[in-house]
Structure formats: structure tokens, C-alpha cells
Image (tube, rainbow, N blue to C red; front, top):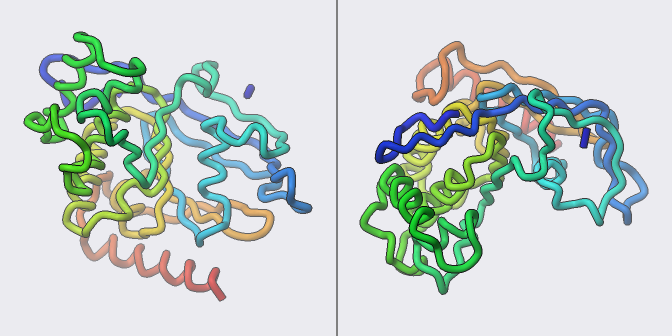
Length: 262
């Protein structure tokens, strides 16, 4: 393929700033499919901003994320250009946060967070940094707890800390809050916006309100082959509170989604 962290956690700031990513004329076809999923797909992810991607299930949103993360190389044929603003390759510069927390049940919280730095038991320096991140996500007292002793919201906060531990300029998020209750989801949206400030984030979501709360840019994916079209966003900066302007935008997005399901 040709952030600073907003909060200073226990005195340590993590300095991997976001990088812009430009996708041009992407054609992608699964090797067992007769027609491409994408054909001449174009989108730009501005550095240090959140880009949110909406669309009905199966339209190709997760495939795009997994392609950027290099997880589809054996399954697809593709062409096009994917470039970055700092000329760094995507490989090694991406953190991926999935819908499932993917915590290893036999490791405690601190060792799960440190997996991105080292395999197995964490080293002292890694643990110090991980403890600072646990404090940032409000779980400073849970470092020695096993994942099955945590609520769903706590587990996703651990997953967020693990994402931050990687300190990558590009963060890919595949519906990380969709399984949570409304209040926990709202809290984690606000926390993620704070802690990922300065990173370049691509978020997949089925929730128009979530996209409107967090997105500097919002795109709708639809069609076969799939294409992207930009949607209007509220005038104030994210993370946004739910107000009349946001509600108006939300209804407009719902109307577009409903027409895509016909």
C-alpha cells in the first residue's frame, strides 16, 4: 500500500499523532465472488479527526476496515491507491477495536492491556503505562481482576485502554459500543472522544446518533458495488450533545437508511 492523547495520564502523554489516509479508486472483490464489492471507491480520512461510516448490514463497511488493517490479503483481489499523509505504511500504524472486547479470559486486566506491547506477562514499564491508562478509563482498581468478573461496559473500557496502549496514529473501530446499554454507550463515546483526541479514527456504526455525536465527517455506504456519499453534520464540534440540530440530522439519516432497505 502505496494525538496526541488529550489527557495526560499520570504525567505520561502518548505522542502518536493522527495521519491522513487517502483511498483512491479502490476495487475489491472476494475471490469466490463474481462481482466486486467496491469499484472505484474514494474517501479521505483527515488527520486527527473522526470519520463515521453508516450503512445497512452486509454493504461492505467491515470489509473496508479489515482491508485497511491488512486482514483480507488472502481472500480478496484489489487494486487502487491507499496513501498516507506522512508516507508511512499502514502496516504497524493501526489499532483495531472490535465489537467484541476480545479479552483473554485467563489473563487479568493489566496483562490483557499489555498484550499489544508484549506477548504473555507484562513487563514493569508496560505495566506502569497500562496502569496510567486504566486510571484514564476509570478502572484503576481493576488491574488484577479477571475479565469475567467485569461488566460489559467495564470490559469495553479495558479494550479501549488496550487500544490506547498501542498508541497508533490510525484507529479502526468496528461498532465497539453497540452491545452496551444507552447510558454506558454514551459515557464510552465521550471517553473515547477525549482519549483519542488527535488520532485519526474510522468508526463503523449502525447508530445515526452515535455517528452524529462523534463524527467530523459521516459517510453512507450503499449500492452494489458499494459507494460512499458524504452526509451533512451539525455545526458544532464533537463530541456533541443531543439537541434540536442533531435530532434533525438524525431524522434525515434515518430516512436515508430506510430508503436503502426498500
